[in-house]
Length: 195
Image (cartoon, rainbow, N blue to C red; front, side):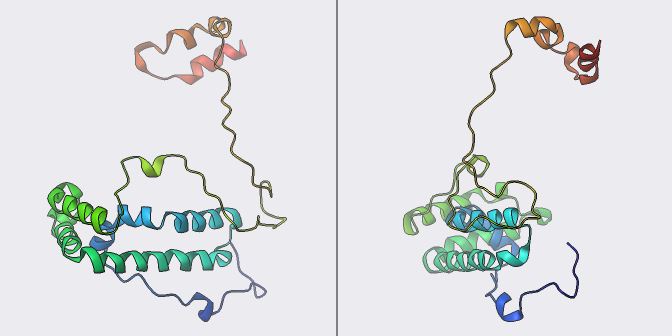
């Protein structure tokens, strides 16, 4: 993105926002629970950045993310401070500074139990953030005429293409048998298409 004299930048007052003042080990220790606690704010911010293609238009959503993270760490401080401090200290003292959770399983379990009991916040199961999840936003659709793509939000299509029929597989035996010796050589298969 290039800037000219006509480019309007937000003022310092518009950008003013409290800072999430935690260290890397503390951020890593609370990362799973923070991501679930602030899930809607994170999605809204990323959707804005993707749709608008201009960070100046997503300052409000960025502030919402910061405020949600600050709220999360304040709740952790008020309810589970001892177990959380033990966990991030363990991560900070892990060998070679890698902050691996496998060194701190006992401390991690204690913090997860405290967060579940006192904050009513369970750690998401593995793969939770990889799953396809819908997000409904109240923001209007961007109306920039120079933006690539459609200006409408379409519901996702869940229609899958039909698998190839047996007659189509018989035309190309490589597709039916598989690659020999487990290597993938797409140029061999594509060459048959052009013969």
